[in-house]
Image (cartoon, rainbow, N blue to C red; front, side):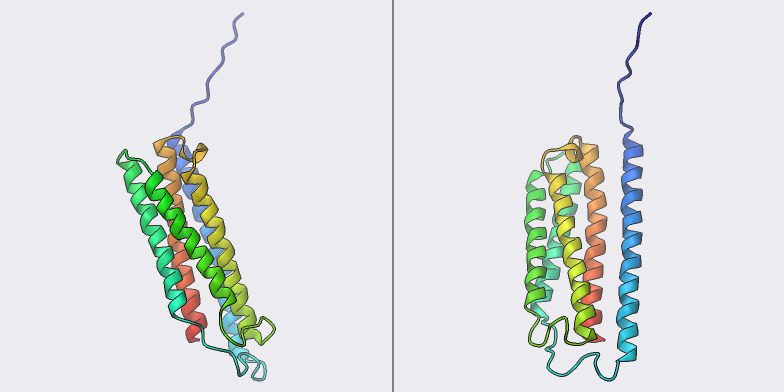
Length: 195
């Protein structure tokens, strides 16, 4: 009697589809969260609660620092797309991955700095405008920094970059996530700034 041992060979196409499906399900769930925040923001804005929506003394949101933050997010996305193109062409991802990591971390740090330097009157207890806005900005900070850790796990040596196909899969999924975050960050800032 002989026992045979089968070696598990991962199915690359199945892995790719599973990762993309999981990423898109996460983005769908995140869209529901953003939709809930938009509803809360507009509902509270519409009710105004006796003038307590935005009491006097709250400074306008700074534009230049947010523009820098959004440009850092865009630079990270461009570097990730360059790394994706390099790995699909058979090249190494390390250099562009490191550049993307630097831009991504800089975007996260800039967003944290922005949160704590909004200007006078930006205290979470100073009306519903500041409370909802700061909570929304906080959610975006957490998502950006978690995204940075995801990118770090793709760039450093490990199972997510064990093969060119695995690296390509993860970079593509990450680029979709980061593009989504860039759009969401821009939309949230414009909504809070203009409405």
